[in-house]
Amino acid sequence: MTKASHENQSAGTTVIDDAAVAAPVTGADTPSGERVRRGFWGRWGMTEQRVYVAISVIGFLTVWEVASQLGWIRPLFFSSPTAVFAAAIREITGPNFWNNLRVSMLAFSIGFSLAIALSIPLGLMFGWFRRLGHFFDPWLRFFYATPRITYIPLLVLWFGLGLESKIALVFAGPFITILVGTLEGVRTVPTTYLDVARSYGAKQFQFFKSVLLPTTVPFILAATRLAVGIGIVAIVLGEMYASQAGIGHMLMQAAHNLQADRVLFAVLLLTILGVGLSKILLAIENRVADWKPQT
Amino acid sequence: MQPVLKADSIGMEYVHPRTGRSVLAIEDFSVEIEPQQFVTIVGPSGCGKSTFLKIANGLLKPTSGTISIHGEDVQSTRGSRGTVFQDASLLPWYTVLRNAAYGLECQGVGRKEAEERALPVLELVGLSGFEHAHPHELSGGMRQRVNVARALAIDPEILLMDEPFASLDAQTREFMQSELLGIWSKSSKTVLFVTHQIDEAVYLSDRVLVMSARPGRLIADITIDIPRPRSLRVKREARFVELVGQVWDLLHGPATGDLESTGAGHVG
Image (spheres, helix red, strand yellow):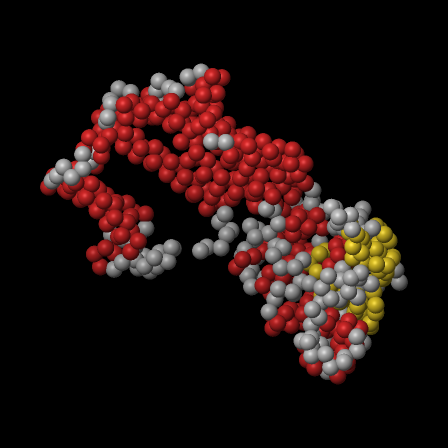
């Protein structure tokens, strides 16, 4: 038990270090308006919010570990933080992990890139040419509403168990999500801007560049951020049901072998992946929209 | 003298797409505006005055009649008129300078040259030092100055102004009115201004065109003989009050002790 809480303590310290690097103490309010704590915590750059986040995370991990060690919960089902950590080390140093990761990432990046490359131009077109939009509207609604998991049998039938069916599955959800987001973005362009551009004699391209793109890009980025999660779900689902490799495959294997720690490691890995990608997109969003009022 | 803007019996009829019922927004509206005149159209909400401005701008095609600027049909020409829109027509992602240059850019002038030409106009409207601010960082009055600058920058034959001060508070609004007169006298442009505020119309204009409620018809063309330059003090002079009253009577019928209305300054 003592050993476990020591490990948690050290994990907690790392969090504080990160926070200190991320937001050096300025002695004033942080950009979010959060008060910087003075005294001991302040020296670590801790805002009130960060202190509570740290307490929450460390507290939860401690309770989980203790409960597991004392036998309050069954380690077989619920594992424990240290067991998950150990499983992570085992997995990463094991023979299949990097191949699994590579297989998953390959399918994800190809499928997702294709989705982005096709959905944005189509979304702009459907939004801009109203009749074209009306024509495709029923199909967009249909595919937006269909649960993507139901495509799996068909996609396997068409593309087999290999990479292709996974790419197709990762493509489907993000494609329709980003397309619809882009389309909505175009449709929200205020008519005033259209009047302004027209009254000054703007050509189509000028209007596209100065009005359409700036109003639509935030919608596209927000939809893309949403699509990241959908794409990750798709890749895992695809690999769980029809694959011989990949993180989803590993997850399923672990579940079959009742390795809760390994399952949780996979969950953690996928979460970090999703959060990381969203953070990158959020950073791009903030960069693109740096003209916006700071809140 | 040849008029800058000539509208000949303009009519505008909207047909409701489903019911097929038609609404007559403007009926037989004719007007000529001389160079460097400041002309204001005043009328109740929904009388078609903004619609007329859109027609003059070429954004709408009238269902009957013709309208031309310096003898050229407005539908076939661009760039001869600069439009000052209501608030929130500036592009929020552009700086003040880029916004002021936007009209020029739309006309195909390169960005660099457009911004160079917009600079002195920003100075004229009193916005030197704010070139690199974004619209949301400005007050409503300052935003409308940018709007005016954008229209002036293209050096138009005529300025079309569609209730540009509607969203400003009363004090800023009065201040902007006198500022506009200053800018107008310096730039010596022809102006067609639309408002529903009678005192604004009388204060700014050489001529006030009074429009009736729908269908919008021209019911009076009043020459404002108050000498220029006009300070805001003019608004308390007898002649000013008299002219405002005259327009008010035209819009409401002669005063009969009707206390529902808020007074001379404002028409619902």
